[in-house]
Amino acid sequence: MSNMDYLKTKHILLVDDEKALLDLLQTILQEEGYTNIAKAKNMGEALNSFYEFKPDIIILDIMLPDGDGFQFLSKIRKLSDVPVLFLSAKDAMNDQYQGFSLGADDYITKPFLPKDLVLRLQAVLRRTYKEKSETIVLKYSEIRFETGEIIKGKEVFVLTKKEFSILQTLYQNSNRIVTIDGLCQAVWGDAYFGYENSLMAHIRRIREKIEKNPSCPESLITIKGLGYKLIVERR
Image (tube, rainbow, N blue to C red):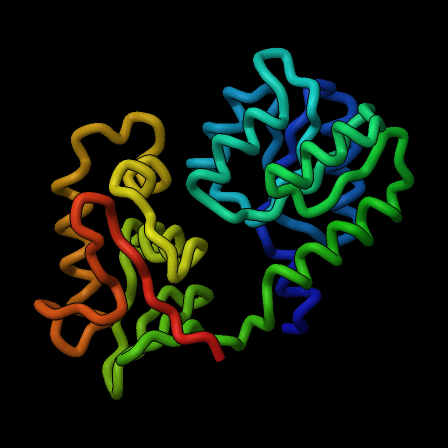
C-alpha cells in the first residue's frame, strides 16, 4: 500500500450545519478515494463523533447552531493534536488569525474549489502522518498501531480496543502530560466519571507489554497528582 493509499484510510470528520454541504464534501472526498468519513451538523454531534469515531483529521465550519468552531477546537485541543482544517464563509483576517492561534492547521474560505480542498487536505495529512511502515519506538518496545501490536524483543502482544485507545491518546500527546480526566474522557467519552480505577488497570496491563520492568516504568510514566506521559524516542 502506498503512503497516499494509506492516508486515504484515515478517519475524516466533517462538521457543518448545512446538510447539503456535508453531503457534497462527502461525495468529493469519496470520489478521491477516502473511505472513512463521519458527519456532524452541530457542536454536540461533533464532540460525540470526536470521542467515538476518533477522527484523524477534522474539516470544521465556524458557525454552528449550538456554538462555534472556535469553541469546539478549544475543547479538543485540551485532549488531542488531531489536525483541523477550517472551512468557513467567514473570510475576515481576524477569524483566520483566531483559528490558527487556537491550533488550526489550515483555513479555507467558502465558496471553495473542490480540488483546492482536496490538495490542502492531502498536504495536512502528509505533514501529520508519516509512512505506514514507521513504528513508534519506546525504550524497550515498539508500537505498531496499524496492526494493533506491541513488539518487545521476540515477543508480540496484541492490544485490546481500550489499550489501543489509551496508547493512541498518549501518543498523540507524546512526551507531554495527559491528565487522568483527559485520558478517561478521550477513551470513554463524556460519561467518563468513575473509570479512573479501570484506567489504572489498563495502564498496568499496557506496562506489562511495553516495559522491561512494569513496576519501574520508563516509557509510560505516572506524573503524580496529574496523569500520565508516554516517552517516545523519535527516529
